[in-house]
Image (tube, rainbow, N blue to C red; front, side):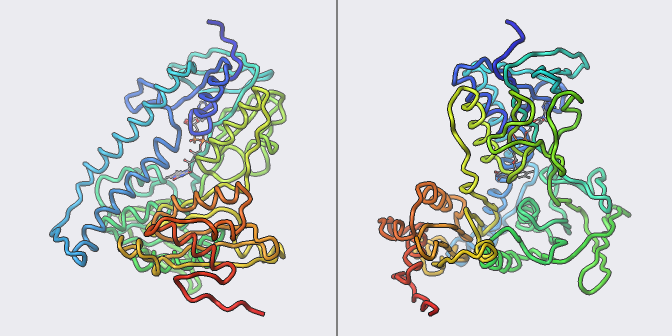
Length: 480
Ligand SMILES: Cc1cc2nc3c(=O)[nH]c(=O)nc-3n(C[C@H](O)[C@H](O)[C@H](O)COP(=O)(O)OP(=O)(O)OC[C@H]3O[C@@H](n4cnc5c(N)ncnc54)[C@H](O)[C@@H]3O)c2cc1C
């Protein structure tokens, strides 16, 4: 077979593997280059950050730890006697690994079924859409393509005051691998990843302190929702310190001594493990030859337009390595858009309708604009909210914290923002995404029949509340 392809994808994470499969489905001769190698150094591993050390393993541990916490704390009041519930961390990790293996192996199967050629090695983009691949033994080979899709993803940001150490100061990857529950755990960064990982270990018994440099909790989230989430997290024992700037961390006698400053001055914290979860950076290490024609923006992301085209003709870039939210589904949508454009179609990702989820308990999920954004933009809007405390299904599930909040345009009633904090927010938010994709008004949702009893009835009621017509709660009087 010749080494010339219609499409070569570099990276087999959600952006890359989805692009490769879709390209092959569209009849394009496709190869995907991935450097990830199994621990024994023998085989290639597909799936990227998301499947190996991100979305899937973190959700596996969140699900298991949630069940453990429920069984330990919430069963008795429901009449279930489950005394001395214990966690076997090794077994939990074995199950997580099993899921990861099944899913990453599944992608290899999908590549085969769709006719995608998988190339194991590090890809480097040369001039004129040539890709040089260095294999694990250091041998290089150059491939040619009509189109190249870069999907090399991201990696954790390290901070000078808290450099990684073997086993004590770790990033998100290390935090998914602890062999036992740390007695005291520190987390730097109260963002999505920090909150999820902190929750896992807190549920299993760790005393968790989270140090967040910003004064505002979850600044990108609607602040009514963020406040409710913060209240619930603190109730669960997550000690979240806002305005806490870490100045140093050192390991002494198997303990991590963390120094930080908050509004009251210098502070010290001693923990058994410290997770650094301050964010992720685009991964372009040794990726671009000087004459590749692809440039980076000022923050190190590959520079692309709205359709993910780079400045080099025929070279595209998708996912975490380009601007926009670092989310798996965003990467996948961009991968599909790009290869469909290569095949002559004209799709466009709707960046206004990308949902965000924090898989804590309660979950937090949203799509569209927050009240704070609309205020800054000077848009006139109206709001409807409905608390899960007034939802029968939530009561039956013993999960009544949180609310649904719908924000609509004051004049046109078009839904501008859809926010949920509460049970299954990650699933409920899809209703907001669909409604917004279809240009729905709040009234459209209010006129829709929702099954009873379901958590989704809270969406119905919040939509009714936008115009003061909720049935199962007293409506707020409109300000004149
Ligand atoms: C702990 C954690 C939890 C997360 N949870 C969620 C979640 O619940 N939902 C969600 O939407 N997102 C989540 N994310 C984010 C999500 O993982 C990323 O947004 C997603 O993986 C981005 O996909 P990608 O294809 O752009 O990059 P990646 O998944 O990072 O894949 C890039 C791939 O490219 C390979 N590569 C890099 N350079 C080269 C090269 N030069 N040659 C060959 N191969 C190369 C890498 O080995 C990697 O396999 C989470 C992330 C973390 C860390």
